[in-house]
Length: 149
Image 1 (cartoon, rainbow, N blue to C red):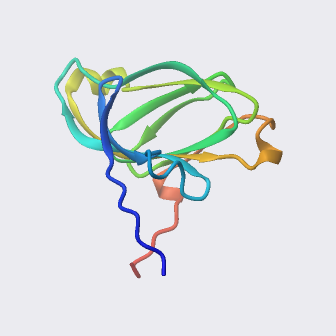
Image 2: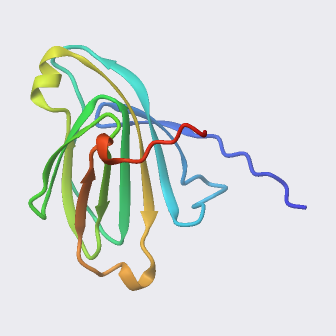
């Protein structure tokens, strides 16, 4: 029988957004393809404040972003410019390279808002690490819903 591993998330600040990050940890680098797991903590931003993750690159991984509250403006080197709202799924595959920014939209920043969400980073299979980058957005209204949970 395997002994359960308890992973305690560490608190971090990512460009103004407080998160809890259980993966990676010293005891567990990944779970399957999951290499990062960020819980964007429920945060009330006053007017004039927001999240501003400056342009940065990714290689050989994908990110899934899901918001419970708030909005993020996603822009990337592929030309994508997408507003991600609560309930939407944002999927970015880096492939051989992609650079992107994630920011609070100005209108939301001007009024004050709540932010709460998840971002999961997945390692690409070796054969896809150097493939083309891709971004897709899936609005909440297009996602399946189940009442059997």
